Structure formats: structure tokens, C-alpha cells
Length: 203
Length: 203
DNA sequence: TATATCAAATGAACGATGTTCAATAAAAAA
DNA sequence: TTTTTTATTGAACATCGTTCATTTGATATA
Image 1 (cartoon, protein in one colour):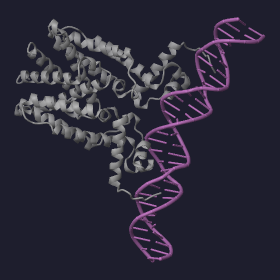
Image 2 (tube, chains in turn purple, red, orange, cyan):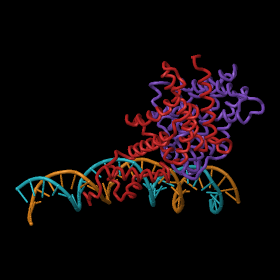
Image 3 (cartoon, protein in one colour):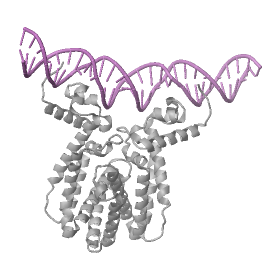
Image 4 (cartoon, chains in turn purple, green, orange, yellow):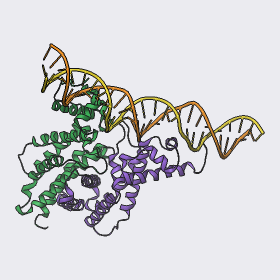
């Protein structure tokens, strides 16, 4: 058959994306396949390739939508209190998100494009938005002339938090038995922020 | 043909492992296949399965050997000076290693076992050894009664460093243009350590 | 030496994968 | 009603991980 027009192209794209999300959430990216997505939305394999360049492209779009979800979750965090308190709430929300959406979050970092290919430019924007959330929170620590330091510290905190959750979620670090991701993140934030304040004006 | 006995079983295992390392180093884990390994050592596919349980098992062994290499690299770092200086040298050596062995290091974290499977116990030992290197360096900061705090801080630093290198090596963080992994790691170590010292005795 | 035994090595075979594209069928236009 | 267009299909191809009956050369036995 052809030209069924049960759904518009945009609807189909969304259906495929939702199906992908459901599969990855349950089984992980490793077990995602084009055929599974096609079957789930009741269309053929070819239709998927009509909507997305290939499976990598589909996963990139899934990851982008996960970044949106993460952004929404972090934006919902109360903005009262000082930098330390706010940052601790942010990390808590972040860790919550990673644990409630483990396979989706893992997909963000498990998936790598084939050698030579790069992520689309608009993907970078999704990441920047998240980093801005942290920058906003820690900005009060810095003088007006230290925007670059603020920029860098936001990236340090973001990357570090990622590392903690990443190693905690795999078994590559014997964290679980000894210390939870939350504990590690608290240590990170508390000490890093204390160090920041102590070192202000020394650089 | 059969029973060629050009090589012992151990020799064959080593040859397969070396071939795997060469392929991953050049092309990344994503493009590793049993057939490539077999071809490279001049044996058939079946022989690989004679030596290793499956491709996942082979990759786990490759990753273990990479952890050994990393351990050697970090153990070679001079042990003179105070915790801060030593820690900065360690992070520098770590970052060097990740950049000189990018695909091998990425394989450590890109590869995930199928759902339900866990890493062998001896793998955990390889990780612990590395964490101990950090614990040893930062131990002087802590009182004798704070071994648990020392334990946790070592894991915070290790995970954070991992996160920084991980995001720096992918394009998932616009680090390269704005700040190198080295800069971020320096910030991490300097501020975290300063915070540790400032907070000693307050916990 | 001749024969039997054994196990290392093979590679065809199976099911599943990503991806392509000529064929098709239904909607839209003429 | 006829023509044009195009959304949709699914068979086909190359590749993948994995299995296992078969083969073959070394070893043990007679």
C-alpha cells in the first residue's frame, strides 16, 4: 500500500520518536532497532528512513528530547536561597532525573556517532541552556569582571556531576555499596563552592 | 584444517587481545567485529569463540588491559610535593593518557554489557587500584579518623575527572573552544582541595 | 609402523541487524 | 475518466554475533 495518510509527516515523526523513547526507556539503546520502531507504530522500515536519515539520526533526536525533559526538570527547581542551597537542589533534581530515566539518560552518553560525524549545531544549544542554569546559580559568587571564571566553573560542576552519575549508574565504580551518588554530589558542591569562595581574589 | 598448534592457547588469547586493541585504537569499539579480529590474527571466527566467551567478553578483557595501562601511567607520576601538587600531576597524567589513547579510553565507558549482565569481580579490583592512587595522595589532608571521608573524596575526584574528560572528548560540551579539559581539571582540583581544607573539622 | 583416539580449528549456516530502492497503490490534478 | 504525483512498502544486500557438525593433524596405543 501507499499514501495511506493516516497521519501527517509531523505526526509520524512524533510517533516514531515516542516509540523510540518507549523502547529505549525499557530496553536501553543497545537493543533499539529500526524494525522495532517500525513495528511499534504500525508502519514499515522504509517509513522510518523517510522520516529520519538513519538510526543514528533518530537517536540524536531522542537524546535532544531527553535534554529538553532534563531542562524542564531543572527549571522547575525553586530559585530561592543562596548559591550553595540552590546548587544542591539542582544536583538533587539532576540525580533524580538520571535515576527515574536511567536508560534515556544513559543513551545521552552511550551513543556515539560514527567516526567523522558530528552532532548538529542545534544540539549544542540544548546543552548550553542547561549550563546556563548553573551559571545563573553560581553567578553571585563572581565579580562582574569574572564572567569567564563563572563560565568555566559551571562547566566544571556540570561535567563532574555527569561523571559522578555516570560511574554510579554503571558498576564501574563501587559507589553504591559505599557512598551514593547523592553523597558524592554533595561533597563535590560543598567543597568546590567553599574553595571558590576561599580563592576569590587570589587568581 | 585443525590442530595447527602454531601457538599455544595463551599465545592465541594474547594475539586476539592485541589485535582487538589495535582495531579499537584505530577505529573505535563501534567498528570492532569478531571477523576483523579473526582475520587480523590469521585464524577463523570460531577460534575467537574458543578463546573468549563472546565479543563482549573480549571487550571486557581489552578494557581491563587498558585499566592496567592507565595504572602504570599514573603510578609513574612523581610522588614528591604536597597533595595539591601531586594531585595536579595525577590529573595531568590522566588527561594525557585519555588523549593519547582516546579510542581505548572511550571503550572503557562506551561499552555496556547486555541488560542483566555484570562485570566480573576481578574487574572491580582494577578500578580500586586506581582509586587507591588518589586516596594515597589526598590522605594527608584527613585525620586518621576520617578514612571514610578520604574514601569518598577520592571517588568524587575520580568521577569528576572522568566526567570532565568524557564530555571534553565528545562534542557534547562546547569545551574545546572555550576551555580545555586541563583547565577544567585544574579548577576542579584547586577549588575542591581548598574547600576540603577550609571545611576540615566542620563536618 | 599402523591404527585409533582426541581435540584444535574451521567455516557454512542461522537469525538479526542497518539501509536501499524499484515497485506499488492511493490521493490529487488534469 | 485519465494522468500525475508521492507516500509507503518490503524484498534484497551486506554485515553482524554466534553456533556446532565436520575436518584434520597431532598424539597415544597396539
